[in-house]
Length: 126
Ligand code: 5GP
Image 1 (cartoon, rainbow, N blue to C red):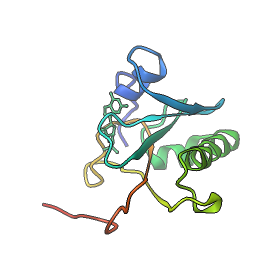
Image 2 (image 1 turned 180 degrees about the vertical axis):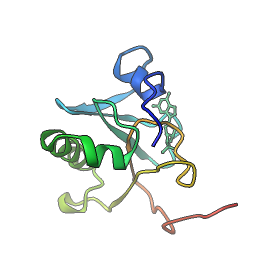
Image 3 (image 1 turned 60 degrees about the vertical axis):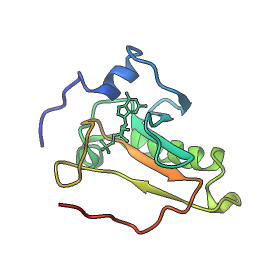
Image 4 (image 1 turned 90 degrees about the vertical axis):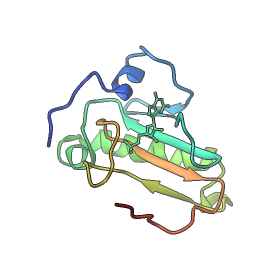
């Protein structure tokens, strides 16, 4: 796994150096709208501390951070009206990692995508 590069765009959003449309936050995580949304709801949830990707977060985050991150994801799904548990029509949660996962920003994040039919699970391309 590459070392964390704190010049990545999400680190800059966390430091307030560049703007983002924030939708929710707690002590451990921040949620903001994707700049190029693929659906009416396209929210990115990121931990506030520095983790490169899913494996880094899973291995190295504390229990409180992991709980805080997951709770914020659930809060966003409910607030966006996409959570089936509260009457929404559903959503897809995606995390990309590394070159094969086509991870563009090397700060762990979960995409929450909904508000429309999301289609087949994967569109593989060469
Ligand atoms: P990845 O491919 O790393 O999983 O996804 C990165 C996501 O970050 C993309 O969906 C892209 O549109 C989004 N993104 C890239 N730069 C910015 C930015 O400056 N602001 C926001 N809000 N989203 C960004």
